[in-house]
Image (cartoon, rainbow, N blue to C red; front, side, top):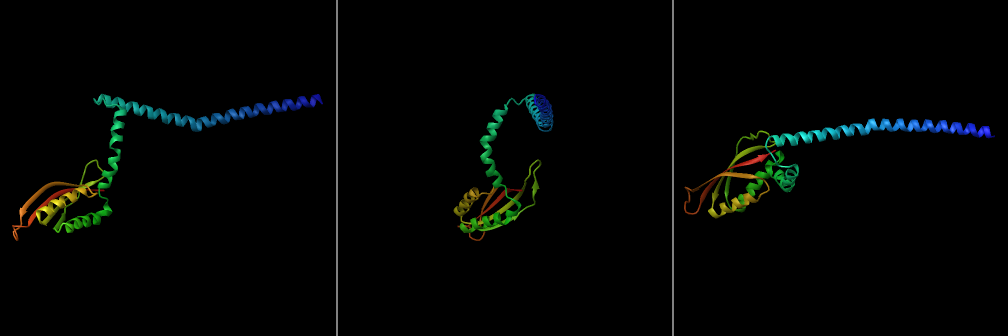
Length: 184
């Protein structure tokens, strides 16, 4: 009986050693499958960050990463507004209808000329110059300009030309706006 117990003890020890070796091999395989690639990626990111910092310092930019991140976080909420202000391709009719509504609200006669799109180098949007001709009361035209400033689309007015109307010069003025709109 003692001898049977010794044989059982020996088999148990052999199984325990085999299990221990199997567990060690399994952990080594896991290490090479998951941990080592992750460590390589972290090392690569650290090296790239260090290289970026060194190149920024070499270019004379002494701004730290924290300062740049702080600047970005300061303007981040405004980026969403800017992205909304750039008109999506499928919203052309909405933009023109909005301009027509603003002119009708102010009792202005309006004519809109849209020119060819101009690509902007390095940007994922382009600008389209527009020419808006208005005829009506001067105060209404000023109110239209304020309305134009308040719409959710970004319209950059570059030039305003005012003149008296040939028909009824005492009360009617003509306003011509040369502006840029930005589209995706």
